[in-house]
Image: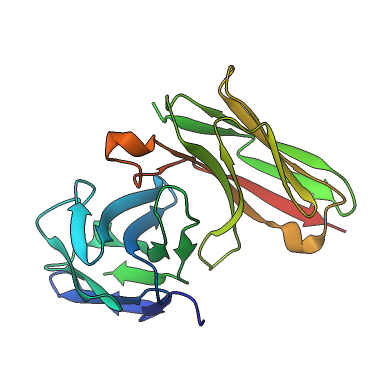
Length: 114
Length: 116
């Protein structure tokens, strides 16, 4: 398996623009997680899905953030409109049997909002 | 206050030396504690997972210990290599029956640099 795949790897955009981050989890995994990592706050869980259904989105910072998982092999995290404070590395991770299973992280998308 | 605190924040050691990283947590109860290694520019990779009833878990040159009474965990790296240079993150998972088992609490990490 190729592991968790994220795209794009890097994104530079201007404030106010819409940003869409994409994730393909490992085949067979039933949990998918979106994280944000910054120097100041470390890793933060934004939202996670179980069997394509959003379970907890309490970590989503604002209404500007939204996430979808239309099927078991694809998820998106959208920021609209983007702001400079959204600049961070966004990770997608997947696992089987969430609390007992290892979460496998993707390479991340480094987002810079100017 | 962060529920998972790690020390030191950063550490520099010579290749071949051993080192120990510390993790103190207040998340209670919990189902498991994990150590992740994160290389620069990459996503975290799991090193060990320990349930609350386990005291130690090894993965090659990495050995994690857990003291549930004092709420402390440590990660010991033996005979360090240049490739061990990375951030090491301690992560605690709440109990399964709380319905929040997937909401991991992350420490801010220890940045380790191994030099010649």
